[in-house]
Image (tube, helix red, strand yellow):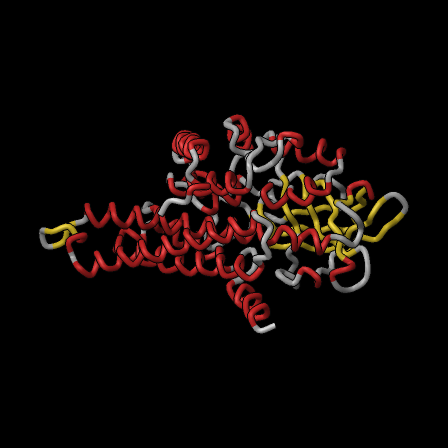
Length: 381
């Protein structure tokens, strides 16, 4: 099913650019980057030169312009061309690391951070999750105590995407008392004394997206690095949660769509007892169901995105969209592996990577259970 806003001539051209870039600059190296556990900074520079890295950020801050739909068109097409959600997480970490800073509008921070990141010269990451606080942002414990013109930061962050490569960390800190009103956002440069980043954490999937733990031991950070007003961090984070969840939903249905394509191609090529398995009713019906679930997820997620962009209150619908896409993706990638048989279990098979990578989509950005709780609270309020 086509959606007019996602299928304009300009966005078709953007898809073509993205596909060519993926086929030329990513696919020949993706297996190596998976084994190495990280993407090279040079890929960021090449993506910037191709006009892809800064999509969705205004030209006034060093971006390439466009709307959130354009960013998701790029993510979709990279996955459909043979990339992965792990690749998206690693290459576009600034999609969660920069928006708060850009929205706050401080000219100095934009010049020092946003511009080099969007030029592919540096990497920005978002540091919120702690060993004892994930979706419960109001419960973070990393402390930033004001001392003259500085804040002194102490605490630990974990499961931070691109932590081992990041130059800049948009960090949630507690500058005040307990609860949401005491949370602020502070830009912490990776090279400040007292900042320690762990070796890359070993994960089930998203291998090419490095993830690490960050420790702050009395790190002195200029008060000028405050992002927005002190005490406004919780609201800033909540404001960006919808975009992050919708992004993961797009990655989920795009992964499902790619796995449908791979399953169909394999079913047509693979023969058993002298016939392609695509001729077997059990296979045909399974693929039909995979197509149905993928199409429903894509259609619903895009409809919610339209309403979100129009300014509607869609907190409930965003949560439902994420779960709808994640549940569809879980089923479809599992079916794709099954249809590939033994080859689906092999590292050389693309569906094996999607199977591993897709598992995080129901955890990151708010777990399936958190999304269901959001819906239940709003339905039963």
